[in-house]
Image (cartoon, rainbow, N blue to C red; front, side, top):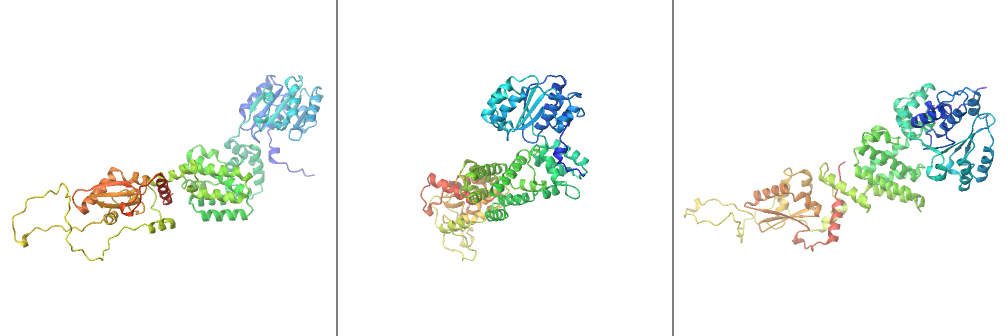
Length: 563
């Protein structure tokens, strides 16, 4: 009769301490204790799932009862080892505290424990998930755990140490099992795959190791699930076999968020939701991807080993180019908060859509983190690498309501009237003595200058500054919604939209360049001033704090970063 198939994590469960992966700090200590017969009466194994707690407990139970131990390891050949392994020796008992958590079960165990073992030297009780015991059960266990008979040993295992009372912890030797490093898991997977005749590629083993999140049992279960794939089991084959192709949709949704495309984000959400995806799962996968991107962005060398997996390297590199670290940190905060609030939400889909809208537009988040994300956009804009924004509908309507400065018309006929004399001539144009009388035809030619109205000079000369100032400065100077200029009394006053714009254009080198352009056009000395607000002819009242905040908001309306 053909034997039934056995799962890989059961078939390849370690049988000696030396076969345990990634827990050498524990296995070496236990081996020395067994070899030196310096055993404790109670052990407490803690750690996440799949790291070897129950496996080490079973190995230790066999080792203390082995008739021919080998340097602290069980021989796995003697009747005691074989009987404990197949469950025929009842002196070694494994209990699940999740289903035997009542005080009556613990009292029965306590009454039975006082009897000496029938077939082995030590009676061993392995209590898995001990944190599930009730308070009364812990109290019933406490006395015998404190003063057990010489033939009795307890091995407790838990994934939630915080739920185990301190009175229990203080009576046990505690061993903390670590998450197994991905490289150790991948090495073990390649060995098992070789023995099982599974064609596992190195990149496939690395992906399975990352998906296991530090648990070798989970990694073996995933390998078992993928073992039916024909051909080489590579990265893409693992994604297909595990049904993680949906993660590619998550990556596409993240690309849409990077472009701040709300329409695209809503379309992706509707498609995933219509395909049966839970909104909590969508946001959870987005949070996991954001975490991976943030780790790779802030810790490029060690972050790769900390990734949760599920996304290929080319996708990660493409997304990393579109995000900055401050924005990723803010996005992760928003996603974590939204996922935590979903269980209490009256409409989960609406809350998920609001979360995506905030991710696409930082202005909708009034928190401190949202302000930091918006300031990061300003810093990127000031550092270059961006293009002047296309006028939005709101900005266009706002500019249409304001009087536009007059522009020069090339086809207009030249004006021939004599310019009025200046009441206050510049200091460097002091009056000189009248020249000797000459014939009219020999009179020296004089430059004829057109009178300049307060709003004419700046629109005419601003285009000439392009190429003479840095690109990010020109994007402000050439945008009439951000900078306007008026000429009066031999001085050009530049009116900045807000303090941010003023800080960019009021640098000495920029003002000197503008002054040279004014002197070349008007002749003589000229001053350049920078003020915040609107030109006086527009009739705007002095701004107060509220006006400054509104100006700052309008400033953010016109920022588009080329990422």
